[in-house]
Length: 412
Image (cartoon, rainbow, N blue to C red):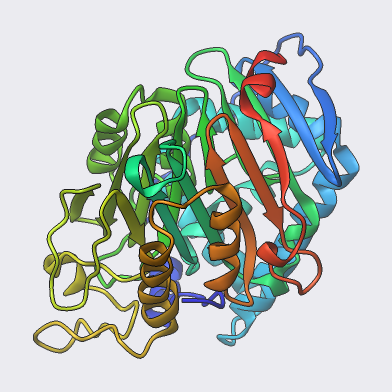
């Protein structure tokens, strides 16, 4: 779905008039907070955070206080502009974000609420502002592309996981990109490929070698009384030992709006795609997919863009030319998400099957990238390559920076 699109007017009216659950009051947390550490991968800051939930947030906020504040201010300015397209004044737009957060907050694990409080305190930002920032992803369309390949499909047999994040390059969020190496007090350590001032996970990989990538897949089957997608993906990195546990976390949710997911397990060389909306979750495992009229399967490869293969999920989709108001399933052909980021990607994966390596994956990412691609990662565990958009130049056209995940996880 390329450019970011604010969800239809009905959802904003629903947010303003809906009956969201009461938010939990912030509880002061008194503790001695140890310092995090900061290093750099080229121009990208790498923040090492460890300890209790509050400590993680406080370290994040205090390590780069000025930059965190600038990042949050930038995101809020962008949100004001985008919601303003629908004729809402700034105050009404922020009221919509507040209403959305109140509905989602009861489903957010307490540890993340404590971390947000620590971030607010460390950076000197009002907690309400951070709540608005963390409500935004589930209200916007994030069209992306991802594939996982392993075994005979790759040059050395290792699993390769690639994702392009197509949000909005106009947002300027890429100016505040960061890597977070997080060692929570409980749970697995993980790397969050994200942005300053945001604790949820859009892209990431755990010390267990499990990687996550979501793809916006707008659906009429949607609501906000569930756990926001970035926190759901973070739970996977912290809690899942394998993909079955990861799938269970997404299945049980409760979920909010439509997303496709590509999850990979590098040590086991497995991958699974999930196509979801609020009430439905269909799973597809590598080498166990069945083709339909519009889908493509490549041996030892799993790929997804916005389009849903499962007919029940597709029936409720607005993404890729879907029309839930019409009977039957609409062809996704004619949308760039399908023609380029799905069929085009599949053709390249078929062409290079057996020769796929990290460098080839980077080239494929560039070939199917949209002009709104703000982030690309390529994982061939334990090596991780990340590219971030620079100005209006899409991520795969910039420099890929590599990090050794084993070294990062050892460096607590």
